[in-house]
Image (cartoon, rainbow, N blue to C red):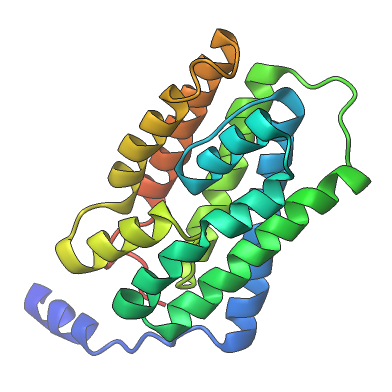
Length: 209
């Protein structure tokens, strides 16, 4: 009975996402991520990956986060094209562009008059983690370390969440002389939470659509 069920499961055909499903999901994922970024910006918080680098440069030089984030992702598209294909690269380019734009537009519509820094840093990363899972499941990312992490997971079985967790903690620690210690500790905790969400919800062969 077990063998029969196992053999039948192999014949199940999983329908891929349509382009409309991909487009809607990527927009929603980008809205979630950019909203989490806006929460972090309002309390001076940080996260990891290329977004974390953009935060550091934003705090150091007061350039807009969206512009910095878009520019520092440009070199990684070569790896994406060579290793991940044009579909992934175009989706990622669109995702980076939307997050760059949305992160600058959110403050025009939402502003918190009383936002606890610890809550904002942790919950902002939770929201971002959910957005990343949506993007990954629809074969997109936010460039930078995301591209490297997904490439290593696809080709070498290294979990994307684990790699990003290590990189993200290093990025947050690099901000030691830029942000206050309470925000720094909260940002480290937030980066861990974000990557745990990815590690638990995005595993090879778990999600097939």
